[in-house]
Image (tube, rainbow, N blue to C red):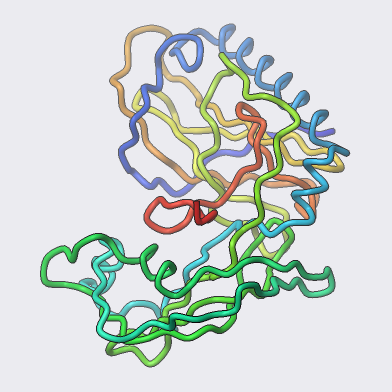
Length: 299
């Protein structure tokens, strides 16, 4: 069992909805208080690892299909203009063609050398609706002229997988926009309950797992009165537990109710492999959330 800390990189500078320096969760206190909070967080991480390692929940997680990266792939070379990029961010799509109204009920998610799993597939219409908003914003939009079923690569909890996907043709683009069609597996019930009063905030989501599996980049929260987020990692044979916190600059005073999201890269002693990536406060797997803040679970 190993505990390390990783410093933050690459500020995203977006507003969040949480107060950062209030009460016992994240007050701007003394060095002694900070040490006490660190001890509480470490104990919690050990409890989470002990609950998950060897559990039926961990076995279910390793056997399922859980996206840990983008489930949407832009056309080859990306979107060409700033207007198209903004339209994608705004979910400003227009359908100028017919989408398939039949498709296979199930499809295979396949891992090289580690088997496959059968998952239900969503239709082209439902997949399109996850990309398009309720209305077109302004003059800029992306035009979808059709779709067909194909395959794409998706980063998952078990490594890269080949996944059935809808290929949407876009007006003006030679290659399609792809959206994974396979429904992720149902999350196993965590073998430990969320904790109350634990310092810090839950890790928001994974951003990237390095190709060699030896580093993980996640999104963490920090506030205007601190020196940025820190993510501690506890590694065991079966899990990697992340505990997000912040380094404080003030011994007293109040902070405004603002927070920022920031990417933090955590270096690991050995590759993630098939270990479960866990968040200490919630006791749950750290999961990818899809484009535009939607969940990758099709819920």
